[in-house]
Image 1 (cartoon, one colour):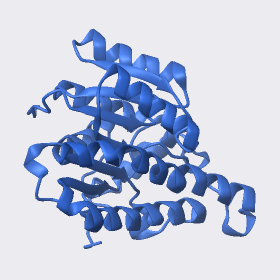
Image 2: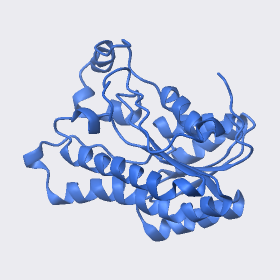
Image 3: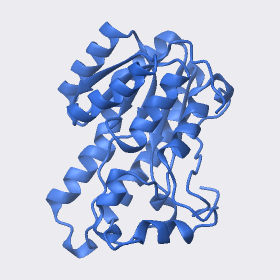
Image 4: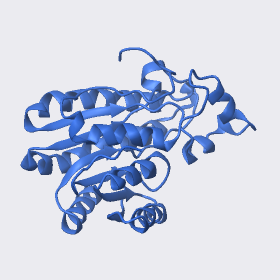
Length: 256
């Protein structure tokens, strides 16, 4: 695996206590970033940090609700105190309920939008001043291939991730002259605890069957997402902003 030297830059990765977030945290730590693992699951965050530090990396775990403005401010202040200014942000935390459209109540809609869209907006707003001061920054938003293809029984989720897609492009335009890039990774079906917990994946063999139907003939892994994130966080990606790097096994091949 090719490594990129991130020179000790401080990276905040939300939802990094498991799944894709954990994979991205481990990979960026291997690339010599200092990692702040933000997750509402404190035990999961601690486990991610343990994996990183035992391999010689630098990381801290912070238990935080990444959609609560006061909690975000406290987590950012702790990160700055322990690691330094934040110049890499991966907005990964999110929820993905499967509910029929007509059964989606306002509480579900509000919760999904609160976590998946309001949260990344507030986290980004908190850390961008650090990036402006450094004249360098990387914002990577984890969206979803469902924004490109649609997904039945996920109208609220797709709406939230579609909003995150537009938000990313707006950031790229507004912040492009400051040394900050903003890009997005829409994963396809990735083998994570969230995917395995979905009702539609409970039938035996469902995950493997889904993977076999893709052009690449396999389900995705956290490492697949981490590789794309590592590239977008690197100096090599300094001329890439407002872009979508689809990591979906060929599920979607359009231009969006």
